[in-house]
Image (cartoon, rainbow, N blue to C red; front, side, top):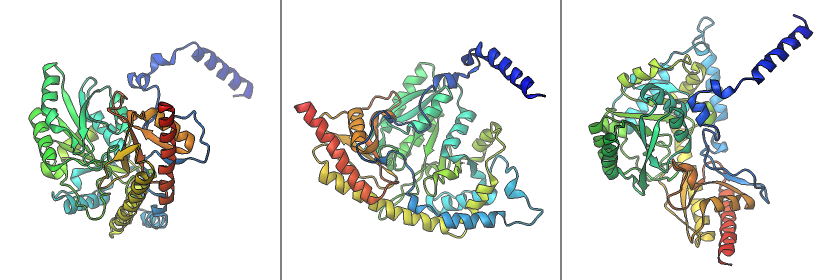
Amino acid sequence: MTVDSTRSLADEAARQWAERELDDMTSAAAKYLTTGSATDWGMATTIESVVPPITLGSGIPDPTTLPRQALAEAMARAVDTDALDDSPLRYGGPEGYEPLRDIIAQRYTRDRGFAVGPEYFLLTNGSAGAIDQICAAFVTPGDVIITEAPTFSGTLRTFRGHSAEIVPIDMDEHGMVVEDLEPLIEQLTAQGKRVKLIYTISNFHNPMGVTLSQPRREELIRVAARHGAFVLDDDAYGDLYFPGWDRPPALSALSECNGVITVGTFSKIIATGLRVGWIHATPEVLDRVTRVRFEMGNSPLLQKMLYEFAKDGQLDRHIESMRKLYLRKLDALCDSLREHCEPYVKFRRPYGGFFLWVDLLGGLDGREVQQAAIAEGLIAAAGYGFFPDRVDRGDHMRLSFSWVSEEELVESAKRLATACEKLSARTTG
């Protein structure tokens, strides 16, 4: 085919497609999700900072903690196989690399008190991919998913992509207000609706940082079981509890996985770029997920690398060092907020995770504070982005302390104070 004939074909195709409306071929989800991203939290992008900005926006591990050399060595061991053994470099199957699933099962048995084997785990493309696959297996368009309000905005986007109806339930300092759950389910059932999932971030909540209390954990399992709804526990931060604080009992252990589906990830405890997570549930539940899994499984090479990294206790030692570092970072941020922002904010210290949820005082508006802070060189999330209806129940900011240095956290509080002071002066002036 000549260059001219190729050009002519391309021009003809361009003319034909120019006359067509792409939305006629677009799925309902793609039509609905016209803006935002998987981690959209209300970022303003049109304001320029007066100084190079500090970003407290996303929950990303500290770059100094990334075990680059150890992962490189683990990768070398992963590919160092017999010439006829191509298992790290071929399709891995829907469940994922069994030795890695076995290590995850051993850690769950040890740390969460419910003895499980690898058949209780399915490896996925991070916890976000896990939630997407759970929805594909169990959510029919129009089903109701009850979510905490506030909650992680990326998961809300996933639920919308599966055409679910999202119904919020309030949060307080003890997590989901579970006493409101049964009346809410009964109300929805009376309207002819089916509640399929109850979504919670039970440990070190994103964005609030709170942890679901044990009495509420037990009642959540009871209520969900009575009404035939799965509890979907997003436990991305469960291993990142701070020294001196005990891990709360896992929902999966309290229920022995009956009616509880847990998702986890290596993204927060090692690196987000790994994109390896898991679903923890009964084998019967996992069977339903694999039925709608069409991508030939995730990378067995990465999974074997993680197995090599974790098999001799290196993962546990790595997590222990991260816990100590993030506690120091939280201390630095909280101390600086108390020193510089006391008239403008209050907050409750979390016992783990990446996030500090800040209440704004004196009539300060979260959207305005977010934009004023950007001008001062601080990028952080306003609270409204974490509510299903994007209406903040109060006025808040979410400060992620995981990624930047302790020195930058101290400076962040100063910049936030300047933004709040200017807004307050404008309001009262």
